Length: 116
Image (cartoon, rainbow, N blue to C red; front, top):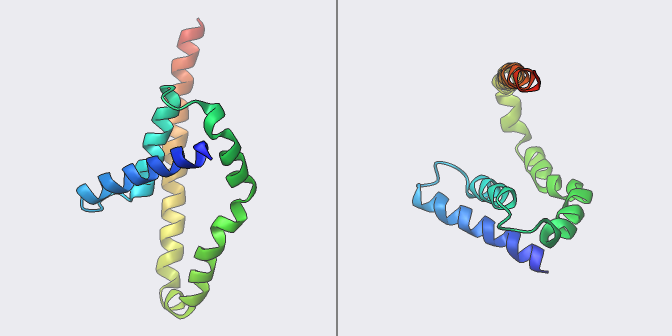
C-alpha cells in the first residue's frame, strides 16, 4: 500500500507542477521524471515500490485498453487524417532512431576512452 501512495504522490506533484506551467508538459510525465530522480537519488527505496511496479508491469494490457477504445470511437476522424498520422509516425520514428543512434555513438566513444 505504501508503494501505491508513493507513486500517487509523485503523480500528484507532477500534476501540480503541470498546472503551474499551464499544462505545457503533461503532469504524469513530470511526475514520472520526478519519481525516476527520486529512485536514482535513493529518496525512495526500490523495495517500497517494487511490488506495485511489478503488478502494474504484469498487467500493462489493462492500461492500454481505454486508449484503444478511444481510438475505435474516433475511427471516422482518424480515417479522415490517416495520411497525416502515418507521416507523423514515420517522421517521429526516424527522428527517435537517429537521435538514439547518435547518442549511442557519443556515449560509446566516451566509454571506450574510459577503458584505455
